Length: 419
Ligand code: HAM
Image 1 (cartoon, rainbow, N blue to C red):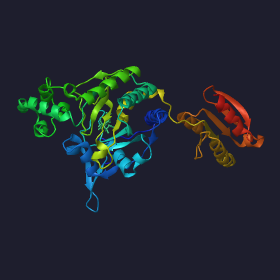
Image 2 (cartoon, rainbow, N blue to C red):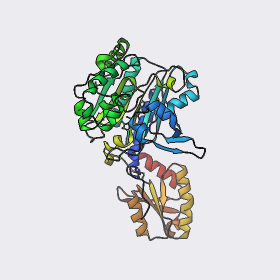
Image 3 (cartoon, rainbow, N blue to C red):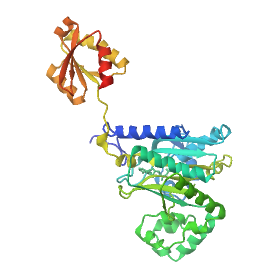
């Protein structure tokens, strides 16, 4: 059997890649307006980075990481998410000494050994953003506003921004205790996984997709009732600033995230047009993570967008594939020789020129030009060379012009500038 791609991964082919490029370009432009710089972190790291930051009792760390030993016996993991590597780089390069606020963005693949389904891949691409150094709730609202503006710039509709606060290390333990007490009676109803994790990490039960677990937590206490004064004030200010920034949101007090590093504001941007995997983007504050990973006490906040999910919400037909401006059709060896340097000059001017490298008939070359979607076809034959000219066929208007070969590059540039 022919070798095929691994289950749960996806080739992004021409025709679809234009949508991805569009999203990436828009994201880059929005991030740069907000003062972010790009960071490119490696796609593999020591396993410990992820187990310590994402949390030992999360699905990602327990069962979804691609982990292997390198030849020295060190445990290495293909990154399942982008925040931990960026925090590692932030600490390793002491970026905290360079500026009081550090704003970073990244694009790239993340690897999770999940059960593949629509919108869920084993190599999924994310666009992420992380900000370090500021704990103001105004920044939380601004982060959400960036996400909102990016979705508007890309023109994606049907999105609901859900927000919650997960408290801090002062108030969350109290909530965890209350939740544990509540879940004690429900223990037989919970799935095996939740029963096992309930003691160490009862919040995971709120995130379980199993029907019985979902039913069991219906009347569970909500964290918003347990927030300390500081967290409550912070969250109130986030909501107030979102109003000022015209960012609409839904309060979802049951929103917990599948990663343990979050504190205070957390959020998910969900789509009404996706199936079970409906989160297009997600993120939140992680004020303890830099310190937890050995850096100075530094607040952090960020989000990541799933590119596959976002791209699936966009109309593919609106995107142009890469088509040549001009296709050069030649008849005879001499014409071919002329075309070689001509194409070179055209490309030097930024004109997308293609040709047929074989000795095909004019009819066949015209067919190829048409298939490629060339805007113009330049026909060079023996007679044309004698006259020092070439025929330029406008494939849209179906008209034809004779042009001097010497002035061709200039004439074509001018035509393309107005067309
Ligand atoms: P996450 O919720 O695990 O958060 O992933 C963020 C987004 O990536 C999801 O909302 C979803 O759109 C997409 N995604 C996740 N897993 C898959 C998958 N298997 N296949 C396709 N898409 C997927 C994080 O990764 C955090 N690092 C976000 C963050 C950044 N928090 C703070 N800063």
